[in-house]
Length: 117
Image 1 (tube, helix red, strand yellow):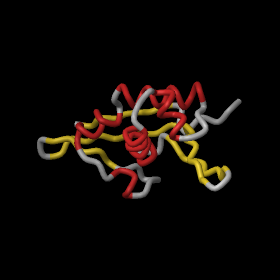
Image 2: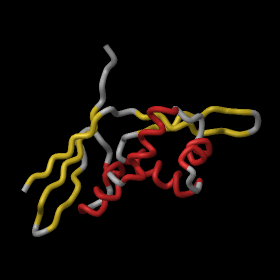
Image 3: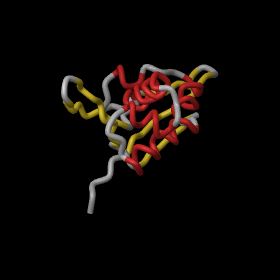
Image 4: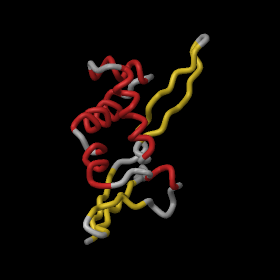
């Protein structure tokens, strides 16, 4: 049986607004976003499409992923940076000829969102 890895995001109400708390096992830079706007941005339909394509098609590079999604490379890279920051994906560097390509790999299989009031 394959080991599963979950990512927990804790949203806490504080003084009339919501903030995203960092996980105890994560570094501060992983959760430097605040508010529900960041959570909405993280869980957008485009991020879901990216996760699905990485999971099902296993692209060899960010460029190939952008082509599969029919999206601009920079926009896909920005979305991947956010997914990496929250610990959903990692990049594997592979040297090909004179270039280094970054292969996105999905490292979680579930997301738990906990909202405390």
